[in-house]
Length: 30
Length: 571
Image (tube, rainbow over all chains, first blue to last red; front, side, top):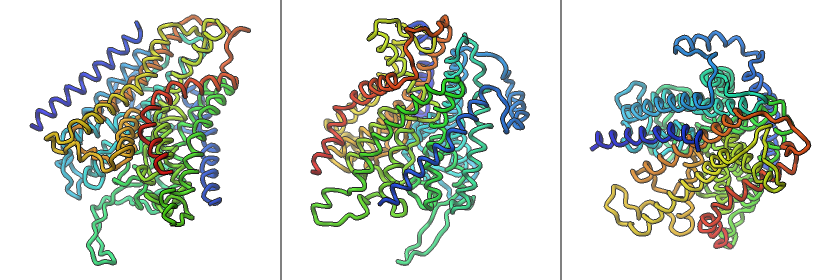
C-alpha cells in the first residue's frame, strides 16, 4: 500500500512540474 | 501597556534602520559592484566549476524559469525520499521513525515552496538529519530561489535591456553566499548566547515538581531558527514553533526573530530603488506596503490589548489584554505584531497560538495572507506586488484613454492575460479547497477514513470554518502558519494542502517573470509628457485600490462566514 502511495505521489509531482514547464511556453504565446 | 507598544515601535524602526543599508548592499551585489564580501568570489567560482556551470552565460526569461523549475523538482524528490527514510538515516538519537508517504508528500512540498506548513511535530516527526539536510537546506535554497527570481525581474525592468537577463545560477549562489549565510551566522550566534540549544544529544530528562518524569527534546536549534526567519520560512524545530521556550527563550531572541523575518522583504523594496536608480518608485511601493501593514496591525493590537468581551462580561478583569494562547514573557501587543508580520510576510512562524486570537485579529491575519504582497516573502512578495502594478497601470491607462506603459514598455493584451490569471489563481485555489473540505465535513462526516471528517474540527460553527479557511489560505500564500484546532495530520489535508502549496508557489513566480521577460523584449519608449508617472502618490493609491478590490474583496464572503460572523457573535 505504501509503495503504491509513493508511486502515486511521484506521478503527481511529475504531472505538476509538467504543468509548470508547459505554462512557461503557454504564457509566451497566450 | 505603553511599554509593550514602545517595544513594537522600536522593533519596527530597528528593522527599517537595518533594511535600508541592506537594500543598498543587495543592489550592489547584483549590479556586480564592489562589496566587502567579494573575498567569497573564489568559493562561488569553485561551486560553479564543481557543478559545471558557466555563470557568465546570459539567459532569457524562459531559460531562467527552466533552470529554476528543474533544480526545484530535484530538491522535491530528494526531500520526499529523505523524509520517508529518515528512520534509517544517521543523526537520529531519539529513534524517530520515517514519515508516512502522505506526510512526506506534504512536508517535502511545504519546505520546498518556502511555506513550512507542518503536519508533524518536530520533536517526534523529524530527525536531526532531516532538520539539517532537508529543512535547513531548503530554508536556504527556497529563499534564494525567490530572491534570484526577483533579481531577474529587477534586471528585466531596467531600461534598454532585451532578452539578456544575466544568469540564474549566478543570482542564486550569490544570494546564499553574499546575503543569507553571513546574516544567518550573526543571528545564530545571538541565539546561541541567549539560551537556544545547540546540542546534538538526544532528549534530556528531568523530574518535575509534581514528581513526573519529563523528556525534553533539544538539538542544534539556534542555527535553524536563524535562517527559518531570515529566509521567511517559518518552519520551527519544535511543534510549538517560536512559542517554545527553547526556540524563543526571551525578549532579546523574540525581537531578533521579529527583525530577522521582516528584514529581507523590506530590504528588497529598497534594493529595487537602488538597483533601478528609481528611489521615488521604491518609496511609493514601500508606502503602499507599510500602509497595508498598519491597516492590519492596528485593529489587531487594539483587539488583543482590549481583551475578550465574552470574558469581560463574566466580570473578569483583563488588565494585560487577551492572554489566551499567549506567552506571558511576550504579552499581547508583541504577539499581535508578530502574528501580523508573520502573515503578511509569509514566514508563518508563531510566538502565540493564532487559534486563540480575537476573531478580528484572525480576520486581519487571513487578509494579510490573502493579499500576500505587503512586503511578502523573500522575493515573491514583490513578484506578487508586480502583478498588481501591471493591472493598476492597465486600468489607469484605460481611464485616461492612453496605451498603458510601464517603465518604457507598452502593456498589451498578452501581459494583462497573464496578470489576470495569476491574480485570480490565489483566490481560486483557496476557495476551491475550502469548498471541497466544507462539503466533506457537512455531507460525509462519517466517511470510513483513518480520521473521520467529523473529527477534523475541534470547534464547530464559524470558528471551525475559519480554521479550514486559514489552512488553505496559509497553504496558497506559502505562509505555513496554522490556526490549529484542525485535525490536519491525515491524507485528505496532506494531499489537498500539498497541491495548493505547490500551485501557489511556482505559478506566481512564472507569471511575473513571463510578463517582465515579454516586456523587456519590447521596444523601449522614452518617457514623454503623456507617460503615466509611476512614482507618484496617485499611482500608489491606484495600486492600493487594485489590491484591495481584487485580493481582499474576492474573499469577503468567506471572511463573513468565518471570523467576521464570530466577531459579531461575541458582542
